[in-house]
Image (cartoon, rainbow, N blue to C red):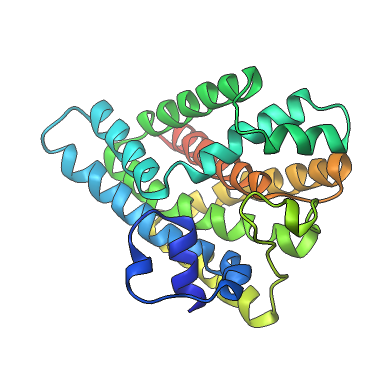
Length: 249
């Protein structure tokens, strides 16, 4: 039920048709976040490879990016935009939280999304097709696995009734922690050469710096912070892969 709840919560695919999931299970969906990355990464990579048989690689990369946006309903990208708006325009905790809860997107959010997608597309385009596919298969679930650990480090910054999703995640149990770690680490086997494992270090650094920043500014995290964290951690992984590829080739 917890795994099914995670797929219902983090994707827009009709998993809810399988069976009705009680609301309490959605408090534990973060431990299954990395596993949902197996699905989104797998579909994105499949779209990349299949469309590259017909279209130029540049078009195939765009189609791969679009496929994940459709699967997730832009859930994380919405969080990233709100994160940039809130922390860019807010001067204190209450102002930041108020801005992030506003459904309208501001200048910081627009600029942030533009540069995010430009960086994502440019980084993937800088890699050979086979390596780009391997990077996608790895980066998505690994970034989500690392990002899921935010709920073990920080408290929720809002009151439960003020949550946009009306869900406050429960801290992970040791079993859930292990499950999330395994789901996040296992996709590293897709990396073609062992030296690409160094690309995990920028992800860990990004996670630490961003969670420290959130702790300082709002004393915790929100759902928008989780969405922003996973996308920026994923971007950090791609930066690492491109740097390693540039140095070794």
